[in-house]
Length: 303
Image 1 (cartoon, rainbow, N blue to C red):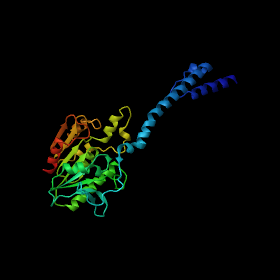
Image 2 (cartoon, rainbow, N blue to C red):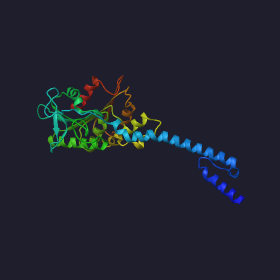
Image 3 (cartoon, one colour):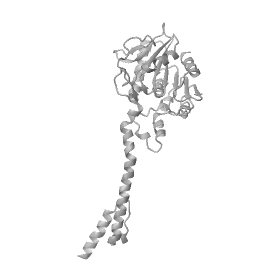
Image 4 (spheres, rainbow, N blue to C red):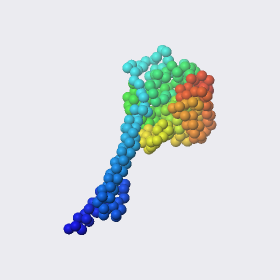
């Protein structure tokens, strides 16, 4: 009977302790040492579980709510329904009447169409005064895209939704002006959309301001102590599409950009297969002042 009880005690000792703490034969045959081994095993198990939770919870939170950080749309109560006298912008619609963005027409038959893709925050009408004054050339028709889920446009923001909308905008513009060359310009996140369009459609020139190599890389650098890249739902891999673009490319980036460091532009410019130029603006952050660099940008796209 004693031997049976001892045998069961030994088996219990081995089972009670887990893989975090090894039980030796001496511990198993000693009730006191067995109790110590089990206690240490439980402490190890609890510590490991606590560490796992501390690591997993922020990852789960970022995965669940990441799009709230990435996309920051605003919604006007009254989107433009007709021409705005201040900027000249008016709704640009698809063949079925859906508003894709806004257009400022050239005074006559345009020499070129310029597609504009903004960053991740606000809505396109917030950028109206800036882009219409920068591209004041009367021979250029400016078409600025409203992202799905932004402004008065229905939809849900996402990488795929933005890329599809970019192609839809190009196709609608080309259907409207079939014999007019199309250039593309993207700011920040819009640079990825513009590059995607240039990789899949016939674009004459491409200009990018404050672009990223990929959004996943930006996110990973923001949280270096976490494993972010595999969790990013909308990686916006600009570099992947840049490899398919052979048209002339101009990239402008501030050397003090804390949001998207200038290293992104320095890496991205090497991905394109055509003629590229990188203009690094000193003492400027993510939002450019568009002084001399604005003239360079406008001249490149409207020449």
